[in-house]
Image (spheres, rainbow over the protein chains, first blue to last red):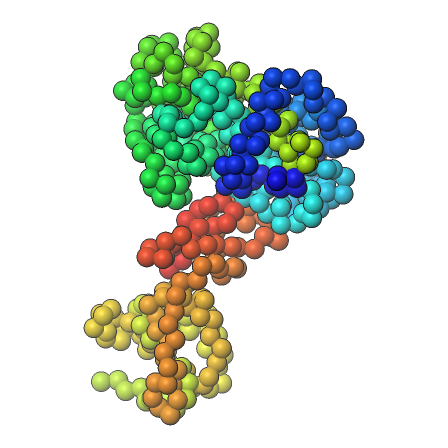
Length: 308
Length: 143
């Protein structure tokens, strides 16, 4: 039963609960019209302390397509946050007005802190610093299921900024619940996955894993290659960003190393890490992935509100 | 050889890692004590080579969770009639609240005054703890 629950981290839901959610998401993909009045009279609050395009728009579009309404802010300077209001006070105020809320915050753990002050309103983490982004994982997994049928017994490559890449952390945490998963982690030494992901998730769950600094030798065996952006906003030092930002660029030449069914995913936005020429390759699925994000968020809202 | 006389009734905190005795002394507010307290630093130890010891000539409440967090190998001897009446075994606590602070500058605890600093034990051997909010792993003794 997901009614009234929060989704802050992929470990908040069991595998069975995720299954229930994805089953509903597949129904939404097939017939979104069927749900167009499901959330009439309900309000979603979007609290974005950090810029966002896809996540905020997809949540807002999801709620509007369910017949509900939205309130919120897209940058903190347009709210009392600019006056120094705490997360605790902001979220308690929002609970007075909304039925469900979504929070993005540059500080890691901010949505978890917010849940400590809530009585009944479900809260969804829409990305906290370089930590977690569980609803991007919902998007990624729905895309995996739509392309390959299931998640298990697959090889997943992750490339780019794996240290601050919150979408990567959530994706790996989610995959740790499934059998037959193999990981290939491609990044510069400085941007490898954080210790808690390597020790607590990968090693403890005995997930076969290769860490490398070249993508070409491994692309042929991958079912999915998940490209990520080196995020300027996570660096305290501009020089480090400039040194690392273009280390991995996926272009037409490199795509020749990929298998015929190696799909390319990306949480977007991209900068230079995937050349635009790759977009026309049928294995490039990142824009379809963005569309799936809206459907799976519709399913999540329905589940957390207890409507389905 | 330096002699520290035995205590009649009180507590001896032994096997404190050398160099940490003074910090512990201040943490336990023993500098404000109105009873006899001895702090011995760099005492010889077969096991540790060098160790610190605190002798307290009084029965006081000790935060064993804190001591276990710092180092579960510290031993606490309860003294009655000038001899050891019992030993308190320390363990690394499963959860610590507002004792250590997260050092990750990206952690929400760096800006949210209302947030408690909560850590859970992840590896008793390494004595490593994970921040409940940002998942950063710390070894408290190293702080």
